[in-house]
Image (cartoon, rainbow over all chains, first blue to last red):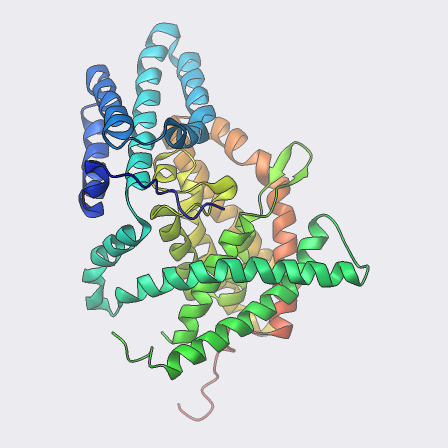
Length: 210
Length: 187
């Protein structure tokens, strides 16, 4: 598993603060829906491609992978429009919707590929700042993300160990039942682990931290 | 919220991420990815509040650009796509499953587990997911259900069964949801 979808480069796009890029993405997507016309949408698509491929020097594969994920839906969208509205109008309105959606997906992919996970987490913490008023501690979000990232290899390693132990006893099961017989001991093990981790954190004063 | 609640929340966000790595099991023509199993387990094991927050945390991981969706997917792009509704429904689904589970906790058995997981994991997920799909793709309700719900029904039924069996056994071995306290001393 690659560590993140971030693609390291030394470019002006990468140097922009993550918050600014997210804000631009949000404003841009609203504008794209409000000013939805062929010249605007095609211009935005060209702009996103220029910024992503030329300015940020992202590999085309990084953008293609995100576009590929929605490709079938875009095709289906076009087909539905043609069936409902007929060739001429269907291609016009449907094509516009397809290009608009593709532009949004690519723009989001550019923001993701040019912003470090840590910078994005910092933005999330800042956005959640006002929630302090209702008793949420935004600094906890970074801790939660860090704990989750640490838990991911632990959980998959424990799962592999349980499967090995069961195979060693000759009790290998396949299919959906395999999930059930692995997941129960796995959950109990990692729940105990999470409990122990909480005690360790409390012993080190995590409870009093703001 | 205690530190233990935080570690449980992080744990189930991680479990959901790991389930995205499980290779898809193919039953008939439709591949089943195991990730919604994480949604059901989070609700069934942690209860409403922590289950909701665990899946919300998982969505934060997706949004900040970690490849935790099946096939290494992730990033903001998935929230602009037509399947965003399914993702956004996950915290709600886990919350609903948790709320039902907490309500019947003292007489929780396989039957109740199936009810909770089916209502949250199928009804809630499809309601939000298919609605967003229909809005984004401009489909009628019939076409949206045919493309966004029917193909996944068998797979999701299997997942409900697995999650329910697991939830009942985990409740017996290591119950996390606390018994609702009867006010024995006060009132």
